[in-house]
Every structure is written in C-alpha cells, then in structure tokens.
Amino acid sequence: MSANNELARRLGRVLIIGGGKMGEAILAGMLSAGVVDAEDVVVANPGVEKRERLSTTYGVRCVADAADAPASDTCILAVKPQVLRDVLAGLAATGVFSPRLVISIAAGISTSTVSEYLPDSAVVRAMPNTPLMVGEGMVGVSVGANTPAEEGELACELFRTMGGAVLVDEPLQDAVVAVSGSGPAYFALFVRDLASAGEKLGLPADLALELAQQTMIGTGALLAQTGQSPDELIAAVSSPGGTTVAALGAMDEAGVGHAIAAGAEAAARRSKELS
Image (cartoon, rainbow, N blue to C red):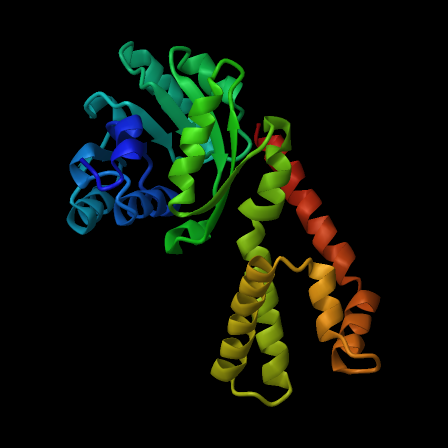
C-alpha cells in the first residue's frame, strides 16, 4: 500500500490509457508523491518502445491494449481527443470494462460523451497542464451529471499531489483550456520573445534566456506567496516616468493585451469544436 494510504485506498488499482506526455506525467506524479505503488498501476499504450521505457523507468506493468489490462478501480483516459471515441468504443465492446471511476483529460470531450460508452462508471473530466511534470501543474476538474461530488473531490486530491486543482462547472472547461491548459505555451512564448529581445539588445543568448526564465518563475512565486494581485505587482514595479512604464506603454500600443485575449478566445473556440 502506498505511503498516502487513504488516497491510495480510494483510488484502488489504476489503469492509465495513453502513455504520452500527459499520461506519463500523471504516472510519474502519482508515484513520486507516493499516491500509489507501481504494482497497483497498469499503463496501456500501443507503442512497444514506449511500453518498454515506461516499464523500465517506473516499474509498472504495460500492455498494448487496455482490453488486456486487469480490472481497475480507477481509469485515467490520457489519449488525444481525436481518438478518444474509438478508444471508448473498444472498451465498451468488451462488455466487462467498468471501473468505478473514469477520469478523462481529453480536451473538449464532455463527461456525457464518456458516459455514453461507460454508463456504469462515475465520470470526471479534468484539464491538466504540462507543469504537472514538475509538480507545479494546474487542473480544472468537473464531475458528470450522474457522478457523486466526492468523486470530483477525489480527482482534485489526486491532482493536488502534482500541483493545484480546482472544481469547475463543466461548461467552463473550454475557458480552463484557454487559460491554464494551453497557458504554458503562452508563457513560454513570452519568455522566448523576451529573451530574443534581450539578445538583440546585446545580451548573450544563454544569459538572456536565463534572465527571462527566472523572472517568470520568480514573478509567479511572488504572486502566489504574497497574495498580490497582478495590478498591485505591476504598480509596485512601475515608477513614474521609469523603464517599466515605458515598456508597458509600448506593449499596450502594440496591442499585447488584445493579442492575448484573441489567443485565449481561439483556444476556447477550438476546445468547443473538439467536442
């Protein structure tokens, strides 16, 4: 039994379908946090090389087809939304696949869609992001119409061992995708372009990247630990007539805020299309 005995007991035997980046991130997070023991986890993934690497790295059993996995109590669907329906159809066709709890992380796919294929399982929808891989993820969790609220709390407890998690009404999941699901790419874009600007101003490329990257990390920590609002932090850094005010004015004139809003709206729109 895992060190986290109560959470491990409630999760039971875990099947992760999909050993890609997010599936592996969740696997690694659960094991490193002591949520489950390796012997209580099975990963289903079609690629031989990936199965061998996951088995060697984490000591878990891997199978090519989820239908060949032993019975599970909790199933985490970590496949791409474009193939999820085919995966669900295959599971439903076995006639015996009915874990107590199913957690789907497929963007844009509703809990009702999953329940159509697995009507006997409680279904939870989760939108994690890639910082889960380093224990700093953020996950929006929604429960299906016929799923007890405590199953959503259980999913939140699981993901909080890998960062943060919040319960949200399912209609808000497209917005969660737009803000935190796709958000790491936005911040990485800003870091890349800020570092590039520093390089053009004369900094060595590696130094410019280090400065931009650590500034992003430090600013996030400052906001989280002090409880300051973004506006309060901006005001604290901005001296009248100073460099920050000049920079923010130029960014505003260039339409940075409008570009960020447009990006988030495009992500939410695509999430809706995937459903």
